[in-house]
Image (cartoon, rainbow, N blue to C red; front, side, top):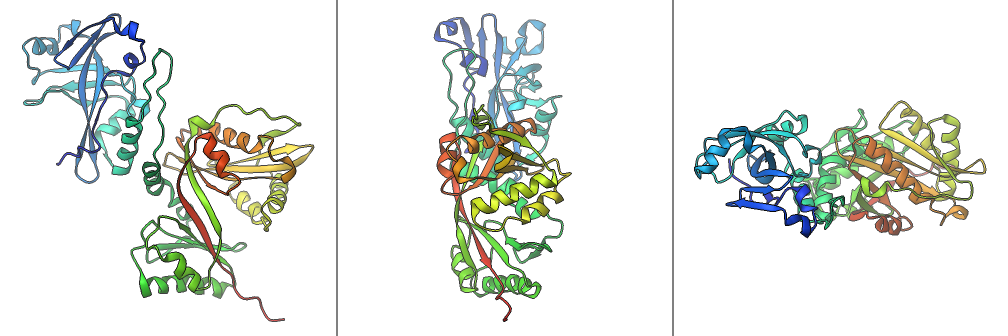
Length: 427
């Protein structure tokens, strides 16, 4: 198995110690050749390797720190004194927040020295997440995202400050494509695959077509795929949306859709943000109240508001959300004032991933500028965090994009829906 050095990383010290003031750092007692850091009233910590297996067949070395009791008379202390711990085994507790698995901080570990290796290696853990990290094979995209978080850690200068990650567009886009994008069609059991694309048909609203970032077809073959989707919905007498993203391949997909009679509905910006950064409190005045609901009467009211806000018929939302009434991964929030729904939004969690999608959010014009949109984002972010969701994704209009960027969302790509509609019947 080869080693992927690009994704490897080394935590230079335990996270707890990194947050101490320089005065507190003066309590450092000694280093043993870079492998052991002893701090008064803190303990002796050992630099070890956390090995990660990738699904490419490669492995990644992440150097972390564990606290170990050298006073237990164990073989590690004896081996260390002898200048070699290639035969030693010991137990300790992990002292680093290892992204993208922050919950492994504080996990109990077993580690062992290996012949010819300068650092011992973690060999096991009873912690369920760390056990998975050690025993499963991981996609490169997951490690790439964790790599970026590591490189952008902000080291606090005083105890109590948190380590704050920032985000990189390319890493977040890779994570989105890998984890969440396919939910656009995989959420529907009736989705049909044709070549590399998927189409979804409903009885009471327009159909949907999309696919992975690389369709692996071009030219006349791609034209034929497009024509089959159009003709399928033409036979049903239904409109259809083909959703594209700005980084898709082949690059001429939009032009070929237009040549087949599809019309752009306008470009939106795709942004991804950290849920924990979006969950702060937002004060709402003017009697504005947020509440979660899936009551049918509320769904009709929010659909009426959405129709006015977006200038197109949004009555389909009623059937769509009623279908998801018992789905815990769909959370609907309305903003009310004076008995009127002035805005609404929903969170759609992508099962089995770290992503949740933020949808809706349109606010009646006379109620804009009062913090409602920000409050809806914050409410859904708090729900997402409670459900273990780390990332929030939004397809944003030009009205919403600046607000989201100020909140800390990162632009990762664009998305455009191309719509084909059947010709109206002659009168």
